[in-house]
Amino acid sequence: MTEKTVSAAINYRRSVRIFDAERAIDTNIVKKCIEQASLAPTSSNMQLWEFYHITSKETIAKIAPLCFNQNAAKTAQQLVVFVTRKDLWRKRAKANLAFMDKTFGKDNPKEAQSSREKVARNYYGKVIPFIYFDFLGIFGWLKYLVTLITGLFRPTYREVRNSDMRIVAQKTTGLAAQNFMISMAAEGYDTCPMEGSDTWRVKRLLKLPRGAKINMIVSCGIRTDKGVYGERFRIPFNDVYKEI
Image (tube, rainbow, N blue to C red; front, side):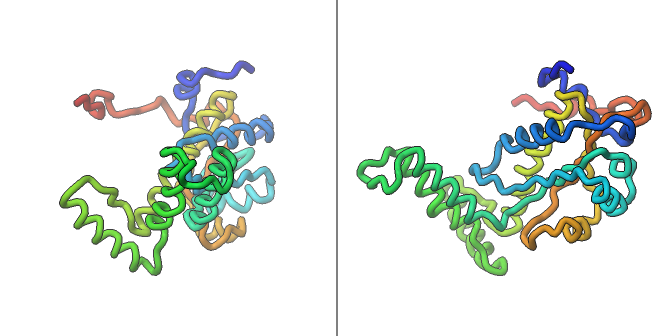
């Protein structure tokens, strides 16, 4: 099978609701597409995500009722659960600092650091902790008040509350999910992103840690003739495209 171009994959991708039960998909190819998902852009390169690749038919059968028995879940050959991990911000910040040690050299004295290195180390060592740290939402509101005052005098970053950072993690994990679905389409495989699920029960079933939040569940397989529910509908492009 010839891999599709990006444009061809985007046009091929549809939300497929019924998959062919007789046509299996290659687990290694799905895993490769998940690896490509991890290359999606992510806020501050924090990569606050995890990907749970479900290949067990038994587990899929348990998850399907938690997705309200959608056909896309019941007929899926495999599932990928995209999970946000905002709670891992300290670990991810340290990983970025460790990468800088590898890139620039460990314990590089400040006088020997380039401006780029100084900015990056300050960002992950001080700015990220300031943005992500919170305690019962209280510190987040204090930061928000500071940004309101600062914003009166100059442009400032305003998304500093705990709820704001949850949205940031959800957005970047959504980008990873889109990367995955386009990659699957390029391989001739089909997907369906499912937001309709009992996320608490799915989380309990997969034994996810407390700080994990489910972004979406993507079912995977190969479409049947009835798998695509009609022609694609989009609002006319000129109604949503604004050139300034």
